[in-house]
Length: 331
Image (cartoon, rainbow, N blue to C red; front, side, top):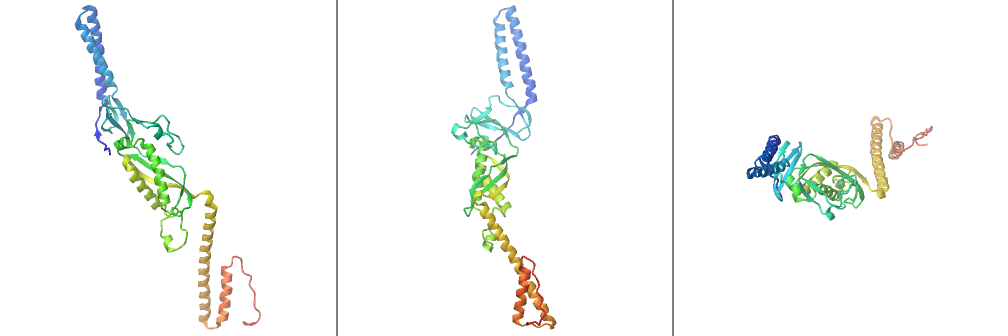
């Protein structure tokens, strides 16, 4: 595993003066050598001309060492295949002109078919070059909707958004071939894994299932599990996952209608249960209050009849039509 090393680059403004002096000295030496060759036609002028050419060549090479870094950028320095270090100093800088500027290229087979984001842009078949400048800013990857089976085997559609950044430039450049494509592929793999270990929703309303973590009711726990999975898998590429959230969660179209009817049935059953519980307590309260006064005495049969009538009135979906008894209580 590669480890990032800190490297320092000279101030570019100081080197601007040095390079400018090099150009002036080389041109001045060239002019003087030409004058001496024209006047004396001696070997001294030829040597000065050769020296001016060497100085000009060195100045041109030194001029290729300038580069700029903005906040949130770093440059990986590689000299003839050997990793020297990473420069994180901002502003105009100067480093060895022989540092490699293109750090690598993915092979045709590896780069073909890799998605570069939610727009479905494909990496070119000719390969993708990595520049020496690496962005260390936070980035977002908005993944596409994928179809996966949950813990119960139900097909669902799920998508996520991941906020990530490069924290170790050496690992990102040297330990994986293309760290951006690596993030996209690992994110989809981790999302499939997390979605397969949790159920979409509680299938039964009991104590065992109500305490279990599900994708629909425990968004925070699922997002935390996904972020930990991504952190573990992307550590080898020097990637730090800042946040990850589910952006889409739904049943697949082929079972969506059936699951919707099941949810509607569960809602109706839960509502009926609450209505019956309330009606029973009201009937019990009515019988007790009638018996407390002592003015009305009801036998068990009449209590059962009154309880039945009250339950019908309280639990019925339509309004009850009252029937007045003009006779005695038992006629």
